[in-house]
Length: 141
View (tube, rainbow, N blue to C red):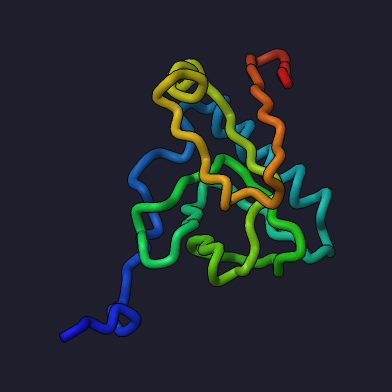
């Protein structure tokens, strides 16, 4: 006897239980990036968000990550509680991660989990690291 997995309702949580930003500066940059991207794409079919659970494997609620900010082109804007790539039939074209002192070693070190290739629009993407202080933002390619 086989089990019909399509009839089982899978719960995709709306929170990972972690704070929005590790510091005020981290949170401020995250909100600023989202605001800049929303302004840049206003009136277009572009979804901009951040600190939202992004699920990338249908049927597996453990396969998610929470980008500080992300942009999805050719996607209806609006409010969402989570982003599921199989429902939207879209993947982010750009993902932003803000590093703080408390997460720098995790973000840049060996413990950093690579984002799954299936989450990117292109198979060739450039990783950029930004170091942000209260006075400047440096981006390294």
